[in-house]
Image (cartoon, rainbow, N blue to C red; front, top):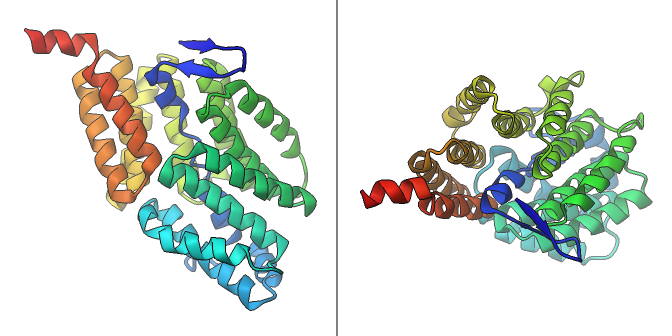
Length: 328
């Protein structure tokens, strides 16, 4: 259920809030790893461009901070341990002469961390807007798309779902630019699919997510990207009543997340399955999934999923079916 006031603010039932929240992230490790691949992934043209932009000792220090953040984001764990790195990065951004591209990339990372680690949508929006301003000035189209995706998710979580939908709809046209990377296109489409779910349009959401996953080369992107799309598709399948597809998505998520011990993705999976259980009237199973989500999110320092897992737990405890079982 969604209600509106005169300022276009949304007041949603907890279940809708939970289902709404997953554009992180996603999306979030994506632009980072595209520009700053891990040693295992090798370099690349974008990596070389960023290194070329690092023309001072301060820029080199910024690059070092970004790499540390990217490693933690790609692994989906240890986000709480990044406080010192974030503080160092903020101090470096106050130094004059930092390359514009690196400054924009830095604000994007800080926005991602504000959302994921602290569940702070206000700070996420502020830092993403700073990054977007610089990306527009430098005509960095892929960076613009990443910023717009983050802004869309943060807006949606703040209750501005229609604004997020409009923003991301416009961003789709930027994907047609020849210099828009595949990763940026997938990130934006994934965000658009998630927002469509929040608007109660699962058919459109599913179409966007299928399109994103089916883009040529998408399967070869960093693992966290298709996995997050898979999580979104789990929500869409559940909303459309496709039980077999939901079960298949859940199995595939488990095969990827659990053996690797990726806290963020494991917490995300438990949350998705908990929402699915609650939608199916299985309050006790939803409660177990909520507890597992909270445990994994706490271990990984993922404040956003910790908050959402807690919200799911409260809703499961208040479910009338569970209350009836306990009473008897």
